[in-house]
Image (cartoon, rainbow, N blue to C red):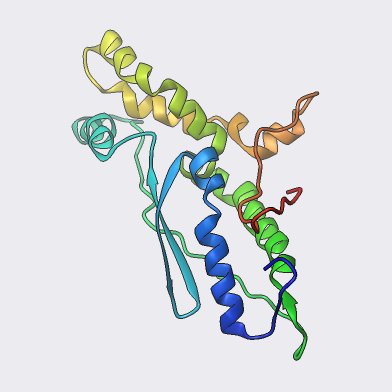
Length: 200
């Protein structure tokens, strides 16, 4: 598939679908989601992600219930949920030209990594920031005990989650600007052909 020329639009879309299905490393190993399903319909590729850091019952216990009980409190953080994100990607080429699938993957990686770094990490850090999600993963076992030790309730849980989310040092931009000797831990090789690695 690496050097196969794709001349038909539908064949190209089929190959892209296969690549998306097999490219789960970024979502599962870096952002801690489980890719549950990949669907295609009318030239649209949709993949469903399930958080592996917290279960639905933990979210209900640690976020929803405290927010409901203390929503009247002044300055109490509002918790929002991102249930769906849609983006449109158009590839333009000269009519009659053949396209190699391998030529498209670096562009896809650049597009999605730019989107995440420049916008999504800032707008939805607990969804798209690898470092914010890593910090949540590290601290999840301590958040409940801290809140109950200090207040005997779960009132502090959304506040502590908000502190993690609002910490701009968890963005890729901050990590790049403050980089010293070690390379950033982010790897934006989101999509790849089997056996091929891209420096993104």
